[in-house]
Image 1 (cartoon, rainbow, N blue to C red):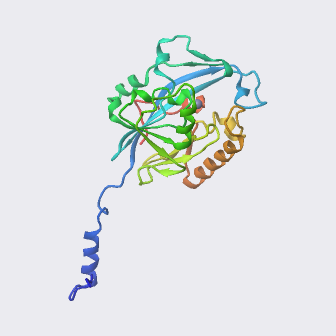
Image 2: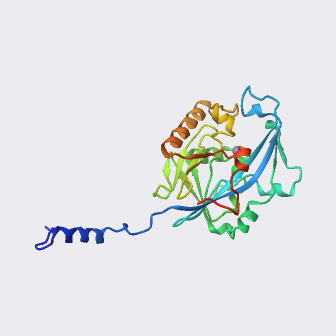
Image 3: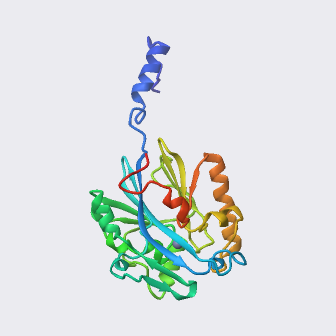
Length: 278
Ligand SMILES: [Zn+2]
């Protein structure tokens, strides 16, 4: 039998030998080194209470809508959500979603925003979606080479929709539950169903900024988070509440910031591309 302790090997010599044998010990750990917040549209609605049942009935509200371009030192670019369709850019009056009394606008296309950063669609290796609603999945097919990262339950739901949010042929990685995406703790997908059947959130670890949770539509604005309100139109109310509690536990455990995508005041206060977070 082979032995580590050959005759004459000192404990110190053995220790050094083990260090030299350790395969990945000297490799740089995988990490997210940059996060850009990109304006991916905005909306005006005339009745806030559709999102907060029984509260602020008839009060108008504006929504932000961001995409997040994340650079990982080994995996390359990942785009979290793609915003409302770029086609809105040529419609000065936007498009109204009648059921929500909500009108959507886009000032600049996602592709133009990426180009301004020197990023081509082919440079984006992963497109990860919180969920498949049009204000998040509007431009997926602009990235035909990217792997779509989505919960399996959300993919299944998308494929039942009469109008598919993206090509059913898209290259994809289907996720079932929580997942440390690159196995290094830099990007962790969190299953947060409720708004839709397979909604997910993303826990991002940045070296200087620390942990940030990109929560998709787990909650739409600050007051709804404070009071844990669930919009009437969510897919499942109990799941929605449980997902908010799950996010709250992650925030506490990681001392993480919660970035509520559609909360316009906090979104406006954030640095947007070309500035970035490290
Ligand atoms: Zn949304």
